[in-house]
Image (cartoon, rainbow, N blue to C red; front, top):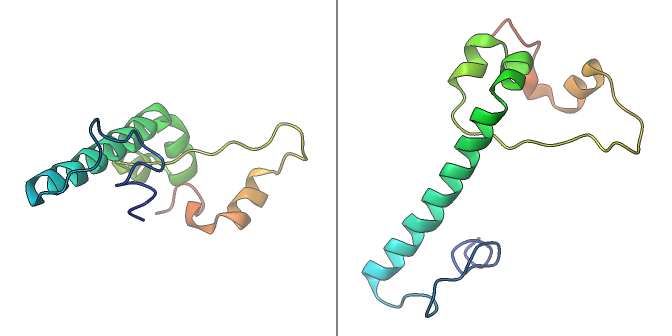
Length: 96
């Protein structure tokens, strides 16, 4: 959503406000896109061992971008089987 990303709702608003010319708007889009690309690539690199654990070594090593989540430490801790039921895209961790 433009208001959330491009306009600075979740990111730093550019000094001097948003650009009004076409070149400036494209530069802002690229800046936001590059920032998020780097962020999620960094997360994938940071959690590479966990990606391999959940998706299997071959698929886990090929993932370029990831978003991590954490199970709340105060609630009941789900088993790996329960997590796989909640997030079926994990698969069985090795056969794909």
